[in-house]
Image (cartoon, rainbow, N blue to C red; front, side, top):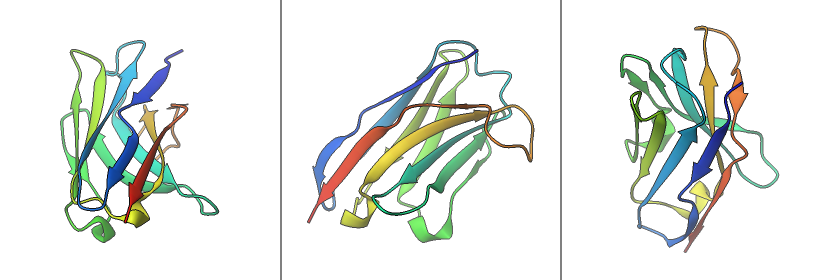
Length: 118
């Protein structure tokens, strides 16, 4: 059993930056994919970023290159750098851990709230 705990959320003005962290209680090396998702009020959870064990990343085109994810397998940490934030980025951000490619997430964090003011 692995616990994921997100941190780094908060209130930021439009155009600002935040760095989210996700700390795992155990090794993340066994997880082929680590990911970030977000859920805005009244909307479905959506994918923000994924990163493979080897460091390959993927992002939705809609983010326009503003977000960058990274992982430190030695420290069991996942990060999400968010730049040029917009009010529509306001959401609860969750990290996830997936062992098998193509499968659903095995573990989820409880989320951290990001609020972007205009």
